[in-house]
Image (tube, rainbow, N blue to C red):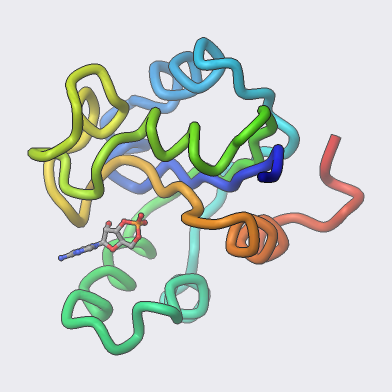
Length: 138
Ligand code: CMP
């Protein structure tokens, strides 16, 4: 069990003006923001970030989508962060996300599903390192 996870607020969350409401949910659930960046991924960066999905049929569309507009990347801290954050955001497909979860409240489709959350401690560390150096974490 680790106390940190990584999240991205995706282009749909940003363009729908959901940065504030989603960060409020994250804080209310007891997560502390350790690092945060408003930025935009190139196609190449999005492809590298999601390289684990390279063989999946949705990979190409996912890469175009994730580079289509600004995102917010953040490292979050809380006991049992990875698992608790995945509970907070709900299922990948918003139509299957439990009521009150971030994807249930703010997402419209499986691709434009508002937020990303790391699926393991190892990936949380890799994904956080993709966006932030040690010096940028507080
Ligand atoms: P995320 O948690 O960021 O991890 C991979 C992303 O691929 C996922 O959220 C979705 O946004 C996207 N995706 C698109 N289609 C699918 C699919 N059929 N199954 C799983 N993930 C998908």
